[in-house]
Length: 307
Image (cartoon, rainbow, N blue to C red):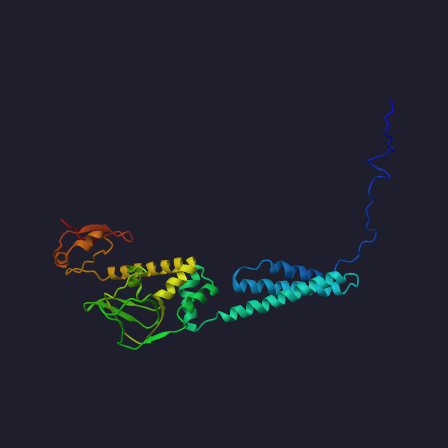
């Protein structure tokens, strides 16, 4: 029985039903000019840019060169008006970005002392200039000065209301008139006091800090700094790391000054040291022999013990 529907026969594999595409009959005999290849080289170099302000300047500078060369290449062919238009617009956009980034970079420049502080303490921790600008803003851009033999803090009198970093000079730390250690540039002046208090607590210095020579320092008020920490958790973590590392350095510097009357050095890192009275330390006769790994001989290092 014949089907009521009649379809014309068609060869679906080849013949009239097959779509036809334009064939490029005339290939260019000569390659594109050197400007075309130079443009692509600049674009490749541009996309290899890094992060940060200087990385953005690098990126947009080479992209601008690449799009400018592409515009020159497209201008030479009257049939590529759209190509020229797009490349020229992208060139203008890159130039505007370069000006914008350069302005932002100029707006976060600092005085030499603050720039040195950034390079020594914050840059190695990955703090950007923008973030450092927020840190400096808490200081109101003010650098304080202490004259020689003047006091930064008096034992039992000066309130703990800020966190400070020494920029130049040297500060002598004493307790009850006894010398503890010195504070040198790019060290926190009051890191132990800062770390010993909670944000809601108040306290006074338990040591005296006196300038051995003219000193300059930068300080952050507690309230402003804690507000900054609340807004930027990363900055809070950076300061926590810097402060505790500074405290550890000060403790190890104290370790070099703990001697008994025989000239032996005590190790302040040992818990038992904190529980032995001073007179007993001088009379202690029990020492353990600790091998010196740097040489063949062993040396006797006193380790105070308690009964």
